[in-house]
Amino acid sequence: MKKITKSLALGVAALSVAASGAFAGEWPERPVTIIAAAGAGGGTDGVARILANHLKERLGQQFNVVNQGQAGGVVGITNMANAEPDGYTIGLIYNFAHYKLLGQADFDYKSFRPIAQVNFDPAAFQVANGSDWQDMRQALDAIKADPGAYSIGCGGGCGGSWPIAVATLLDQWKVDLSKVNMVPGKGAAAAMQDMVAGGFDAVPCSLPEAEALIDAGEARSLAVFKPERLAKYPDVPTLKEATGLDLELGAWRGIVAPAGLPDEIATKLEAALDEIAHDPKWIEEMNSRGFGIRWRNSAEFTAFVKQHTDEVAAVLPALGLN
Image (cartoon, rainbow, N blue to C red; front, side, top):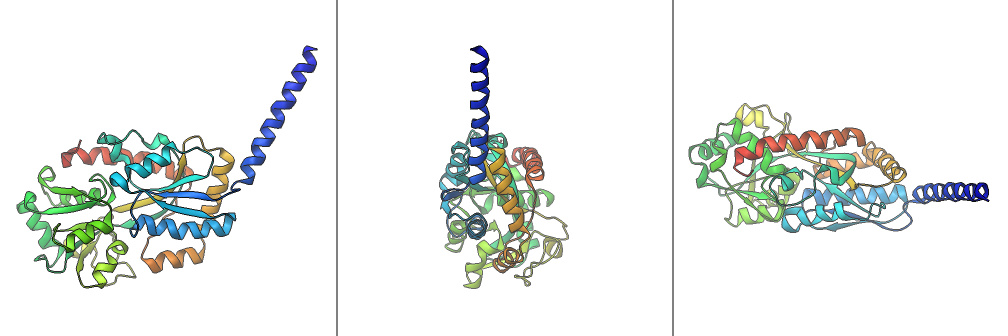
């Protein structure tokens, strides 16, 4: 009787494993939510929506982008981490290390299963069209002379991608970072609107996020933080051209799932993203919008996120934010 019971138990276990594998192999069987922890109209939103269309084409289900940019992105990223790890809620994430380092949230890189990085956008330094600053060197010299006299719109949290990029630049220019006035907001698009209304002296963000107001003649970009000019914005000088500093600084974005996502689903999603990242149609769409492409597979992305966390932890104390 014991042998029969043991055999039966083994059979049930085998069926359970098989059923689990079949379930994972069938994913997705219904629409998938992609959380974009940013407001509509920004770079994270734009990349997420392009990506959603390509995922739908490959995986046969709707991928719905949901904007959750409240509290500088904390709400959206928290919901990514706390979602059921079944593949039906994933997120397009960006630099999030500062939230825990600043005591603003409990999540860290261990809260997620990184699937792949798909994007890197260099920062650019925007001012209102009526600003007295005509070039990047003039802006840096003014901020260095009196760091507290000017306000810089952070967009999201002040330890995020764009603020960390401009803080690194200011540090290279020997600016006292502890005196720099960085103001958090509700995303890059909102910060740009605030700047042209007179609320900020400058906003660091990507050129695609600033494009509408630049095209409208309400804002100017003084430099892009990249070694070469961007094809879509040939009139914007590089940081090296404008200041002599050879730096590449900006925002990375990638797809993550909650920790605990089954291997079968993670592998299938990564394979789809790999195809998308090397698809000429994706490349053309991203380039036409001015978004940069950067591919890192799951292992590379995981290692990068850990390394980035260490780098952010080193910069925050200089900003007086630790």
